Length: 358
Image (cartoon, rainbow, N blue to C red; front, side, top):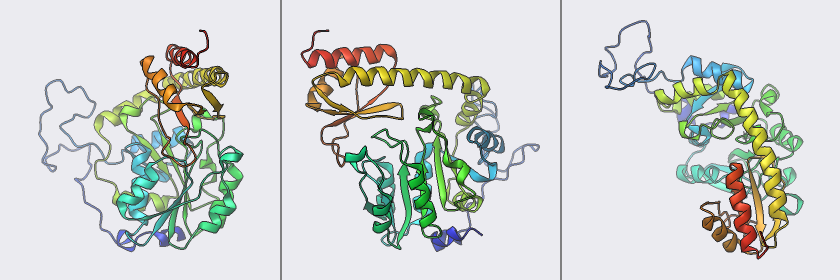
């Protein structure tokens, strides 16, 4: 058994999971209290009148191939958000355990911990060094009750890749002490390798992936948590029995086949080209103080007048993200890279608001 399981909640380790209806596709179903007929208009492959297969083998094998790992290392859920929730529920005891995060970063790490009643230790990224991860400060802040360290790379909302060597140091130094969860939601935009190849080296490493960004499937709600098989087995006790809807399963299998993966790569190249163009255009405008380097499908900008930039976007029929409540982002806005037309409208709007002739 992976020694990292000693960090899990004892009651989860001993939990008898819910016994869902047996999955026997060769037999006719009269054991799950389902309606025996499809609804009129139901064109799904398996039929929406039937519960979907829990963690379908064909889906898990497909995701494992997509992410370059073994099916035994994968559990699928509703986006990477469900992976975060599963980890916190399985490893953190309310009122006793904590997670460690590095703000500014994705807000669900903190929200999931608070919902569970877990503590949150914050070690800020170093803005003066391009939102760099300070691994020594993280290690100094670690306490025995810290069960999970979350790092996001490329980081949301700053857009930068965190130093891979620093993450490897965290995994090594916290071996058998904490899970190190690496959120790679935006890795496809970074031209950088996933850390999935390091699973054998670091049994405490957990990787989060999502189909919401690069594969244009945010509405399908499907993500993958990749980890040592013992961690996957533990989380399988906690996840809801029929977590993934039939339509999601069908959509993922169809829309991430070889043809659609090739299409995704072309669209990513377009996003990267547009990211460079938008960054250059905005950096030249008086309302923008700084455009931070990005390895994702969005950019973070520091503004002279963030409210004026927000109004400019609204006047162009666009909405951009206001993260100013986050640590170190008091004058910042996050802009998702859109279509060339959307990007043009944003640039024109901010240009006009800056008093620069268009």
